Length: 92
Image 1 (cartoon, rainbow, N blue to C red):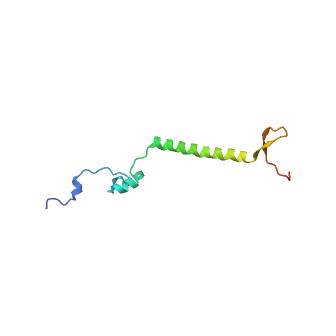
Image 2 (spheres, rainbow, N blue to C red):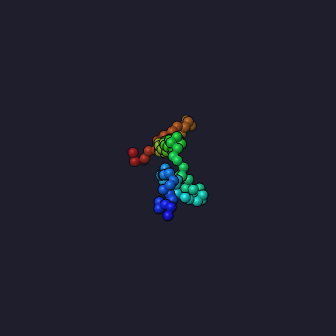
Image 3 (cartoon, rainbow, N blue to C red):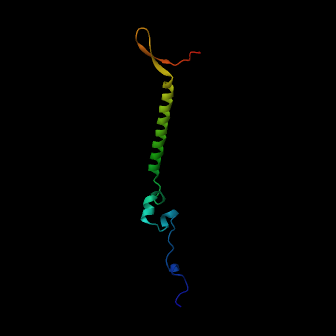
């Protein structure tokens, strides 16, 4: 018997990669799940976070302005000029 060691003992230990990058997978699996194999890109993540925050803030702004305009309507006086007036109840 030449050697009782395992065949992997003669190789230098390779650096282990965390996650699924070191696992053998098919190309279909990698195409469907790219986020598992691509390293995180911090500038792109920061840009995306800022973009989503601005979109949500804009939607909030639109909702706030629509709610303020909801109680207004266009009224006409006896001379025919129009102005914006708040809706009031007949009970007030």
